[in-house]
Length: 233
Image 1 (cartoon, rainbow, N blue to C red):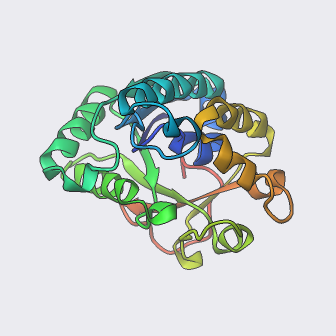
Image 2: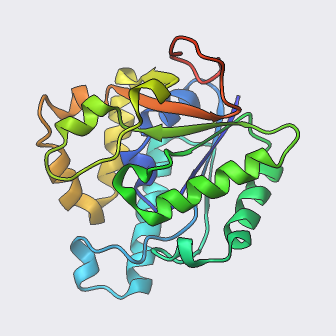
Image 3: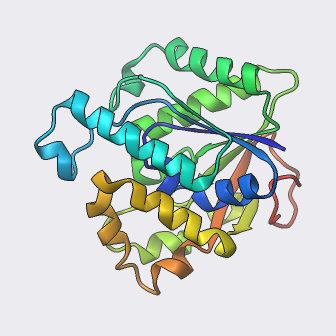
C-alpha cells in the first residue's frame, strides 16, 4: 500500500501518527511524508533567539532527522507560510496537495482530524485542503484523519486537546512494537523539547499513551461497523 501523510509543520508527524507511519514503512509499504511549512513561526526554545529563516532551517533539519528515524520512503518539504495557511488562497494549498497525490498515487492519505488536535488553524486548513483534494477525484485515496481519543485528551493536563468523538473513530492502530521509532522521531525535534518534557508527565506514562493511534476515515465515509486495526480494511 502507498500512504501519503500530509501535515502543516515539522513535528506534526512525530507527535502525531509516527507509530503508524513506522509500522507501515517497516512492513514493506511505501510512505511519503509531506510537510507544508518549515515551522519558522514556532515559539518554543530556539525561537527566542533565532530569526524566522534560521528557525525554519533548524526545524527543516529536525524534520529530515525524524523522517529518517521513521524510515519513510520520501520526504517532501514545502515552503508555505507557517501560521498563515488559513490566510492563503485555497488554490495555493490545493495545488501542492493535488500535485503530491498525482505524482505519488497513494491508496491512503493521512492528515489531522478536523479539529486539528490542538485547534491550530494551520492543522485545520490542511485537513480541509486534503478533503477537497480527494473528493474531487473519481478514484480518490481513502482519507484518514488522525487524532487523540477522548480518554487520551483527558490524560493531558498541560494543554487542552480536541479529541475525535468516540463514535467517529473507525481505526485503532496498535503501535507498541514501533514505539522506539516514534520516540526517536520526537527526540529529533529538539526545538520542541519544552513540549516533549510536558508530554512525559502524562498520567499513566507516555508509553501507554502512545501505544494506540486513532483515526477516523472521513473519505469515503465507511458504513457503520466495528473498529479496524488496519488501514487496509
